[in-house]
Amino acid sequence: MTGSAAASAPEESVAEDADAHPGAARTDQELLQAHVAGDPTAFSVLVTRHKDRLWAVALRTMRNPEEAADALQDAYISAFRRAGSFRGDAQVTTWLHRVVVNACLDRIRRNKVRATDPLPEDPERASELGVVEHDDPLEIKERRADVNAALHQLNADQRAALVLVDMEGYSVEEAATMLGCAVGTVKSRCSRGRARLVPLLRHLREPPSDGDG
Image (cartoon, rainbow, N blue to C red; front, side, top):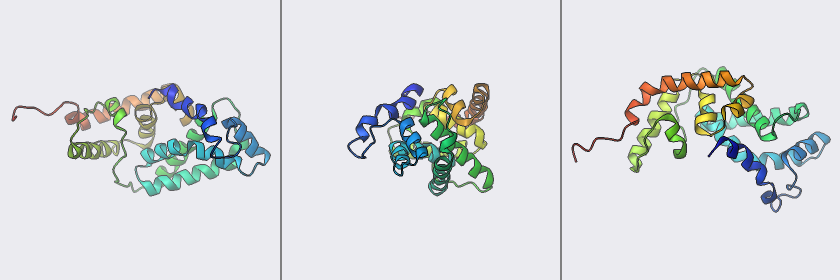
């Protein structure tokens, strides 16, 4: 999945939502504007449309389902209350992702204890971390545990940048908008994060030897 596809796909699915939710044929921006104007259902339709991707970002950033659910709830409340501050200088989906990421980072910084639940890694993005794919279920499980443990070594900012760029497939520019920082900052966080992951994931970068075959 490319960065542009990740950002544009939800907008293209507007028509598909129309059958499930009355008025869902409206664009994201129209729904947000309607919510600000007092429409009691617009925000729910908007969030439902993008809930899967927002949940994926929250879960990969928090690494724990319960913490991710709490952070996502914080984000929804924040977005509901601050919808009037949306200036329209980015896509609504980008704004929503930024609110979710910020809620996750706030919660991570408040919590000193980190959970150790396995990261729900997307196999299609594994190559971005230099990890070679295997077909054996046990090897896949072990690899995910290794990746999870390695990501646990990164600070929250580096992990959020890598989740958006290397695992969710957003461009550096899109990630910068979501994180509310400069493009160079995202590049630096990704670079430093990857550099820290290299020695931790080196054993996953090459296929196992067939010498014992």
